[in-house]
Image (cartoon, rainbow, N blue to C red; front, side, top):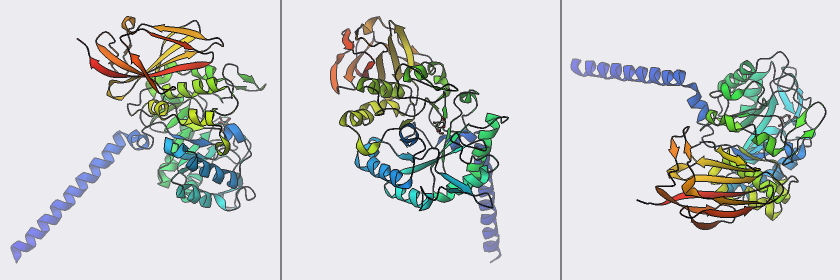
Length: 421
Ligand code: GLA
C-alpha cells in the first residue's frame, strides 16, 4: 500500500517536472525566435484578390461576395488564389466604446457574415486598416485602437490584414507596426500581416518577424513603362517598381516577402505587358494579389493569372527571389533558383520593338551566392520548357535562339536532364 502510494507520487512528480521542462523549452524557443511563429503563416508568397486596383473606394458586400464566387468558379481558387481582401473604404463609424463597424449601407449584414460566406467557399478573408488616425481615403484608422481592432478582426474571422501608412506624421514605423503585431498576437487568431509602408523606412531591414510581407514601393499603376504623375504623388509603372527590387532579394524568404504591390493584370495593359508583369512578379517571389474584376475575365487574362507552371515559379518552396543576371540593349535576363536543382530564366524585353535572343548556355557562368547555387551549364544538361507556350524546346546543349516581342517575355524552366561527363 505504502509502496503504491509513493510510486504514484513519484510518477506525478516526474510528469509535472516533464511538463514544466516542456513549457520552458517551448517558451524559450518562441522567445529566441519569435519570427518563426509569424513566418509559419505564409511559407510561400500569399495569393489572392484585392479590391483597390480596380474598384478603389467602390466596395460593398454584394460585390465582394460575387468576387468570392468568381474566385471559386473561374479556376482561380484551384490555381492557388485564396484571399479575398477588401481594401480601403469598408469602414463606418466607431461606437461609443471605440469599436469599429462597417459602413451599414455598403455592408448591411456586417463583416462577420461576409467572412463566413467567404470561408464557406474554402477561401480566406482579408481586411484593410491604417496605422494613422485616418486611412488613405479618410476612413477611421487604427491609431489608438490597435488592440480593439485586432480583437474585432479576430472575432469577425479575418485571416489577412493590410495595414497602410497614411496620416502617420510623427509615428515611428517600426513601433507602429510592432504595436499592431502585438495586438494581432494578443487577439490570438492567425492573421497574415501585410505591411503597407511603401518602403519609406526600408521595412525589409526590420519587418521580418513582424509582418509576412512588406510593400517595397509606392502604388502601382496599370502602366508598363511610364509613371503616372498625380501632382502630389506618383503612381508607378511596372518597370519602375521592378527596378527597385533587385537589391532586396536577400531580405525575403519563406514567411516574409518583399511586396512590389498588387497585380494590374487585366486592368488595361496589353497582353504582352500583362504577361511580362506577371512573369516578373513570379521571378521576384512576389505575393500574387490579383487586382482585376474576376467576374468577367477575358480568356487571355485567365490564361495569364492561372498559368500554373508560371505560378509554380512564384510559389517554389525554396523561397529564393530571382536576380537580374544581365542587362543590355533593353533586354534583361533574370534567373531564379528553384527546388530540386531547377532554374527559372526570364528574358524581359523592356523596349517596344522585338529583340532577338541568342543565348549560348555553355558560355554563361550562372552562380548565385545567396542560395549557394551554380547552374554549371558545362557539366549539367538541362531540358528547357517554355512556360508560356507550355512546350519543351530542347536542351542547354544548343544555343537558345528566340525572338521576344516588345514589352513581353520569354520565360523558361530548366530541369536537369542528365549529368554529362
Ligand atoms: C495606399 C495603398 C494602396 C491602397 C490605398 C487605399 O495608397 O498603398 O495600396 O491601399 O492606400 O486608400
